[in-house]
Length: 460
Ligand code: NAD
Image (cartoon, rainbow, N blue to C red):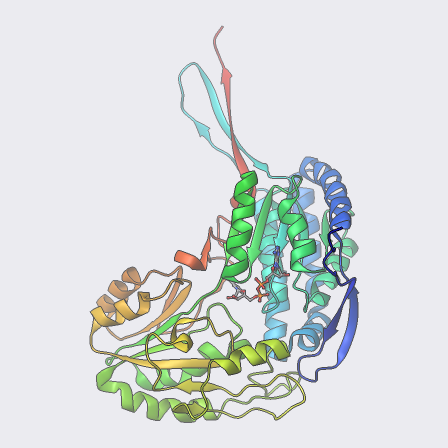
């Protein structure tokens, strides 16, 4: 008889700043996913049939309740994910904003009337049905809402599987949705293992689309499984984003902002600018400016208002990050608490080879490399020398160069003289192996619909 793989029936949730267990959450089984899909399917029918104004009103009420609970949600995120308090408040606010923005789209989700002979041709944007959202641990709240808010607004039900390590804010959001009056079972949170609850969502014939955010490795596997069913899929995957600093840039600002562009969320950010490309003639000056900026980043207790960087999510992540930084490697280092908890100091390697693993892999920790370049062509070549293509920054005072380089870098989200990547009102997603499809922005709701064309004959 074949041995069944051992499955955890529950997950212990740790505070990454202390390593202490703060909660135990049951792991959803494949059979429970089945039940959830059946319930969601029934709830979705009523939701899609409800008046658009009523659906919009309920989503706005959900947004309002999130707003009233920002402090509580933020504190929960500090405890389960080690995010700094300031970041966690922004993240809860982002959920509110996404719900509000999506609610505004419910009554504007119109099809088209297309001129044809002998009749009337109209399109309808039909909801897909039940959508599965699989979220990672690095931004548990915003990423859950990126998929959930527009999917609900477009008339779908949502089954959200949070990451094993960070289900608490998602579970709280589901309670707030119910309290706001959203129909029961329309939005369900299914905590559990990726290869059990997550896989069951991917494989389930009753789930019409998977919105996956996570590693490129798992994303590829999910895409292959979706292909077998021609299931719709959106993938938001990894990144190794460049921060390109030209000699004509405001070097002081570029150096002052470079640290938090890769240290925010302890570098566990798919948009982290971890490859700092600096034009050779200003390379040494830039490093002189960068060193104090990195060394002065405040790393510590994430619940302290002054803290800029907290711990890594887990012991495993800490080990992974450590493995990329050879002992004695030349560079700039900040400070970090000694422990307990999963701490790694801000680290900039100044002597790493452009093709070394630390310069090419997504480390997903507070580690960046600085690489010199000669001219615009080499900057673009280095920026594009990666399988990823998510984000990037370009620092220059030359408008023409800013536009040329923006067009030449193969990435979905670029910023000039800033490090902005994510706004709920603008599209977000990756080129190359950073992903497939776009989230957020004006077209977010349409991504959760099928276009149906109907021709009505006017022949007598
Ligand atoms: P991960 O791929 O290990 O897990 C992501 C989610 O997928 C989790 O909920 C996990 O339980 C689930 N999962 C794992 N195996 C599965 C399977 N076989 N079937 C179905 N679901 C499964 O990623 P992670 O380590 O949690 O997150 C970090 C990664 O996410 C990084 O690579 C980062 O770049 C990426 N990320 C990308 C974006 C983006 O928008 N592009 C945003 C945030 C994070």
